[in-house]
Every structure is written in structure tokens, then in C-alpha cells.
Image 1 (cartoon, rainbow, N blue to C red):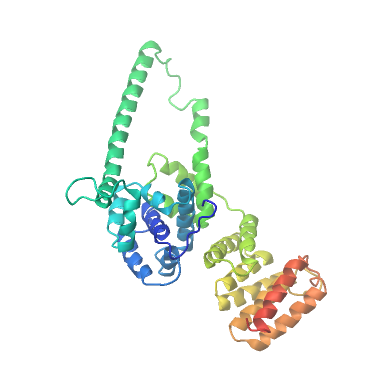
Image 2: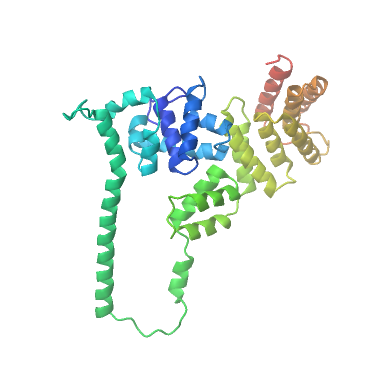
Length: 376
């Protein structure tokens, strides 16, 4: 996003762009977007993507992908949401846009057009711009067809001349030659980059494979190799846990970031279910998204695992802090205060034998005290 440009819940062009991008990448059906647009307008808070996630029309990973692409498109257009909307291509996108019945948006359309009237009776710049929006994809397709036909003709001519002047040597083996085998096994760097980006956005392998299978913008020629690469992709539990911890360690972040962290932590625990640190991160993520009962259960497991790592058999301060806050949210006031007292003692004893970041643990202590003692 360009410096000084701010988009928020009441910014209709920005939210319109978000919905159309969701349709473009096939995470939303046009009818779903149009129905959701009308319902979202009736609210006085939240962005369209937040509403779509609340209504289970987008997963947290899907929302993350939409918002990531929206920011890229805004960056290409200097933060101008209207210019980004006009830059979208495809018949489905144009038809969906024109089906949005919103006087405020229709009033803004002439800003993208030329003069207010082109001299024809009853045809305004507004309708002229809308006509051009509908015609753009058709014109682009014709140009692409002509270009593809020209390229095919050149390739065929080149192959014919090559076969005539440079006939191939007699075939020695029906199989691939050694250089061709190496080429066949070579990983496409673009596919590898995309697979990494998809795992960053969706986290779960099943969601990545589902996206690759149903994404209509993929070339069928590249789809099998990329899908195979994704199926063989190995996640790193430590990297997943570190990324999740970075998001959940501090309070006050956007709920979507906490939900993404929950996906990361769940995947890390799938790979290493006996790691007390990873299980603790999962419990903290559950607490941050409001799954207090689940968090309490998970933090009990991490307490058991982590207490076995030190001679004192004391729980880790991070387990105590979030266990105390989870008890508080569930109305278990006595247990919450007992864990808070234990947390203070553990920090006074420099972590009770655990290798801890005391600055971070003290921040957890302050957060827990505000929740439990001050009721904030």
C-alpha cells in the first residue's frame, strides 16, 4: 500500500476490491459475494473479508490469501482501490461488478471515465465506462488468440526447417537420454516458489492441494508437476512453531493473525506432538482466539511435558501465565489466582530452572495481572 493511503471498514472501493479478488481466485462464487455485500453494508463495523470469514464463506487461510493479493494489487496502483478494481480482468469479474447495486459506487464510476457525456443521446460516461469494462476481456482474448496463432506458426516453421537441414541421428535407445532425464527431473523454480507461498498462506497440505486442484487460473500443463511438488513438500515443525509464537506472544493483534497462528501451531504439533514448547504455543494460540476450554486442556498437557525437562519439575512460566488467564475467562477464579501466584514465584526464581526470556515472561505476568486482578 502506498504511504499515506489508509483503507478501512467503511472504504467501499477497498472492500469491493476484496470481494472481487475473492471471486477472481475462485474462493467465492459471484452469488455468494453479491449476497454478502448487501449483508455487510447493513453492518456498521468490520471489513468485508472479516464478515466473509465470520459467515464461514472464507477460511482464515482464504481470507489471508485474499488480503495478501489485495495489498499487491493496491501496491501496483499506488494505493488507489478504484484503479485496482478497473485493473481486474475476466467476464465473471465484470458481470459481478455490474451486478452490485450500490448508488454510492455507481456515483463514483464517472471518476474513472472520460467526459460526462460522449454526445450520444442517453449514453453517459458512466455507462460508457461500464461497456468498456465488459468489452475489455473480449478484446484481450482476441489479441491473445492472434498472438498465440502467430507463435504456433513460427514454431512449426522453425521445426520444419530444422528437420530438413539438420535431420536427427539414428535413435539408439527408446528411453530418455541422460540429459533429458536430468531435465525431466528438474524442479521448476516458479512452481517451487508458488508452493512455498501456498504453504505460507494455507499451512495445511490438504488445503494447498485442494487449492491447486480447483484453481481455474492454473495452466493444466503445469498443474500436475506443481501438485506433485506440493504433495512431497515437507514442513519444518520448528519453523512453524516459531512463526506461530511470533504472532501469539503479544496481545492485541488482529484475530485473523491469531487464527493463522493456530493453523501453524496445529501443524507443528502434528509433526512433533511430544514437544512441550510446541504444545504450549498451540495452547496460547487457542487462548488468543477465545477457545478457553481447549486452551486449558492443551496447556495442561504442555505443563506436564515441560515440567519433565527440569530437575525441579516446575511448570514453565508460559504454561502458568496462560493457564491462569484461561481459568479466569472460564470463571475459575480460585484456580486463576493460584496459577498467578505460582507464576510470580517462578519468575522470581528465574524461571524455575527453565531457559526463559524473563522480559517476555514478565510481560505475560503483567497481562495476567491486568486480566485477573484488575479485571481488564
